Amino acid sequence: MDMRALREFSQAETGAAEIEHFASGHGIWLPEDVRAELAEVQSGATAAELTAGVVSLRNLMPGGDLFHTALLALLCGTMVERGADPGAAIDATLELLTRQLDALAEKPDELTRAAGQLSLPAAMTMLSRSKETRKRWRERPAIMDRLDQLEEDELVPFWLREMFTLHDDVELLVLDPKNRRAFEFRLIGVRDRLYHCYALLQDALLRHAGPGYLDAEPVDPAAVRYARNDRLTREDHAAAATLMDHQRFHFAYPGVGFMPGSGSPSELPTLDGKPLLTVAPKGIHFNWRPSNMYGVLHEALASSVELTHEFDSAEAAALLSRCGLA
Image (tube, rainbow, N blue to C red; front, side):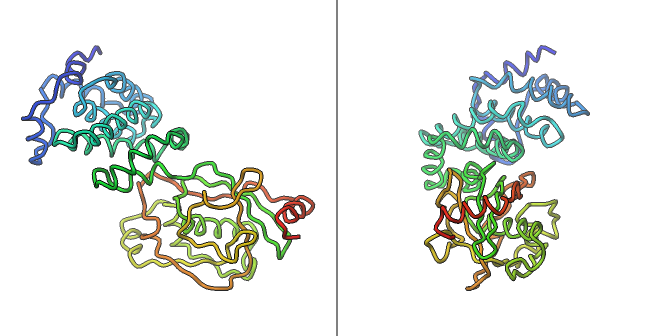
């Protein structure tokens, strides 16, 4: 398939009538030959066929018209939702997103805003499913600076910036001075506020150490499911409006009596380059509303804090000693 019509469409300049048609709620106007080629590209039934379709559209995206290319990205996103490899077009989509953000910063006209309604959901769809890409793009500070500026000007939604601040493959050290134990956990898709980390960490710690560890109350399964974004139903989302959670342990770090949940995991002190927390029996009580503190960003984004290693007694003693907790 040579996709001549689609190639010409992606390069052609968007007309004012197209934007008016889209802005009025009538969808995107497409010539018949473009519709036919799109139907063929999207006709795959298997993951491999859908991925091939994504690659075909991805190859047309570089340098194309902003609005037309944003449509191609959105169609790639719909195929990813049907089973295509999210990595097949994600870099092209994020390069398009960078163009989109630059255009919004320079000239947020109707065409640019309309293109954003297509490219932003596509980027969210793919980023939610691609941890490795999130990690790569998190290392691009220019993106964060641009998102900060545009969010402040109300030109992009806050949840887009949230996607670029997720903590992925971050190793977290947890020390228990009372029982002389030490653990290592891995964070994946964890929001940039400690409330989310606490909700997932206390569940993982109790699953490993057993009920009642450090006199902790059992976790609320509904709160854990929400924090993990684990197959949530419409009823779960409705119930989340009144869902409350609270800490089961005392969370802090050496030299500090209390670590608030509104902080970022990146604000924790580090040991050997890894963020560090201590746990102890709960003293004061604090709670939070999950839907306010870490509302679901995307239905495909899975979040977890999982135990990767418990140190033996000698290793735990050494870590506690290094932190002045011997």
